[in-house]
Image (cartoon, rainbow, N blue to C red; front, side):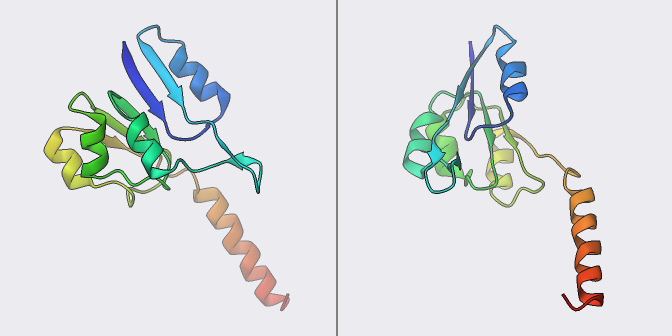
Length: 128
């Protein structure tokens, strides 16, 4: 059975898709930030323990994926899927050296950034 560790709650449909496969054991960090009642970032120490024996890690931009974490996961780690546009939080060279595939979600914020830019231009024009 392949272990997939998800570092923070994502929409239930995504977790359901992963759990649909009988060969996957999906472990999701589900702590909430009490101040905001939203998903809390996983503390580094907890992250290092939870990734042990993971074959795949689905992480957020807030998690640093470096050699220490890859060592903690083990040699069976084959993919790190970043639920973010960039790779700033992942040591790409280290992943490449270990044969770990790294993915991200490019293009998901294009419309929102464009809309926000237009809104800021309009606000400047109206001196808001």
